[in-house]
Amino acid sequence: MGSEKPQGATGAALEPLSAASRRVLVVDDEEVICKYLQRALREHGCDAVYRLTGQAALQELERQRYSILVADIRLPDMDGIELLRQAKERSPQTSAVMITAHGSLESAIEAMRLGASDYVPKPFKPEEFCLVIDRVLDRRRLLDELAELRRELADKYQFENIISQTPRMRDVFATIGRVAATDTTVLITGETGTGKELVARAIHYNSPRRNKSFMAINCGAFPETLLESELFGHEQGAFTGAIATKPGIFEVADGGTLLLDEIGNISHAMQVKLLRVIETMEFKRVGGVETHTCDVRILAATHADLAAAVGEGTFRRDLFYRINVVPIVLPPLRERVADIPLLVEHFIRRHGPKLNPAVQDISRSAMRKLLRHPWPGNIRQLEHVVQRALILADGDTLLAEHLPIEGAQEPDDHGDLAFNEHLPLDRVRNGLVEQLERAYLDRVLRLHRGSIRKTARHAGLSERSIYEKLKKYHLDRRTYKAAATGAPA
Ligand SMILES: Nc1ncnc2c1ncn2[C@@H]1O[C@H](COP(=O)(O)OP(=O)(O)OP(=O)(O)O)[C@@H](O)[C@H]1O
Ligand SMILES: [Mg+2]
Image (cartoon, rainbow, N blue to C red; front, side):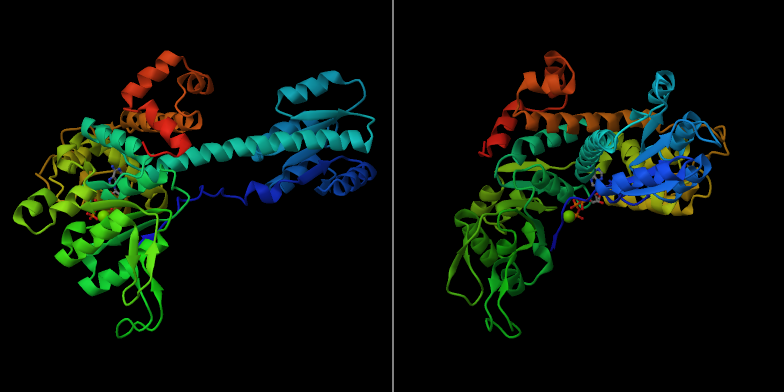
């Protein structure tokens, strides 16, 4: 059982920009001017520091992150323009404001051309100076917000993390898109490691419930009595060891989504109880008399063939129909071999930075070995194999010998292929671009409640190409109308 929020944005190497948001570095060779500006900035709510030379300022920029660099265009040790150039190299996220001599519009223009955000001509009043600083800070904030949005988009794509370009998985994506906006129960089936939980999370995080909890419980992992108390909770003294009242997962997931994982593995009695709570959204804690109500979206997953279990009489038909409103069947990896290069790239990117940042590529024979493997453990197993290979690799390329799987013996890279003849990752990157595009489109459509006209304007594309992309990505604009109003479709 576990609850998870979408991952936060990946942190910058330096401290977050917000901490540096009003930090200003002033450079001027005249200390009186520095002190004068420092006082004006401090009174204006900024955290101001000054340096008397360009070199000292550059050192300071490497030590700390600043929002704004204020520099006189004429400095004794270096030209302000040169300082600006080097400052941009060392700290590209710092905006620059140049102080220019009266009438030297040319250098002001040159400074703006080199990336200064603004300039203040001498002589100036502190209010004028602070006005310029405010303007630059505002623009900064806007840029930061944009960057944040972009990261969010990347995250959205990240938490979905469902990599595929095969038609069967495209259909799965389409179904996810369709059901996410609704409260429909979905039954996700597939062999172990085919991404059932991943799909469940994608449904939740694309649904109107995304800000409430996503809970998952492995129904197969508990003996019957314990499962009942996990699901519905128990009152104090309900059984030996029930020393305090404990809420069940239906209560905890209230307002959110609950994945009933391995639902094929529960007893008849539990099936009856589950059916009741799914239908009425009412339950009693074990040992309790009070009826509790909840609002939980139910997703179910299993590796078993439930229809067959119904035929054999081990799974109740009524519960099966109740949870199987929309079925999603995940194909095993051996039936979507075309996804292997994409997945490998995905796992190298995901685990490479931690396990072995040197690795950039995978050799052809290694890829061939991966493509031929039967993958009984599916994507999870492929992921582990890539992780192990990353640990074992000693160059910038994963080789067949690094892969901890049995395979038909093949000549390795030292054999029939030139040693440096690798499968470039670029070739498999197109699929990732498509995923990103789909996620982007999904977001913009949601924003504009499925309006093609607004989506096209927002994305800077023609309406026709939006229609084409909708078709390409199996997106249905109607589902976005429902999503925006929150009404189940
Ligand atoms: N299409 C995919 N793209 C990228 N990663 C995937 C994909 N499908 C699965 N994975 C990864 O494979 C692993 C297994 O996925 P998941 O736990 O969702 O599978 P599962 O079907 O629930 O497995 P099990 O039956 O064993 O519980 C996870 O690390 C997941 O991130
Ligand atoms: Mg699972």
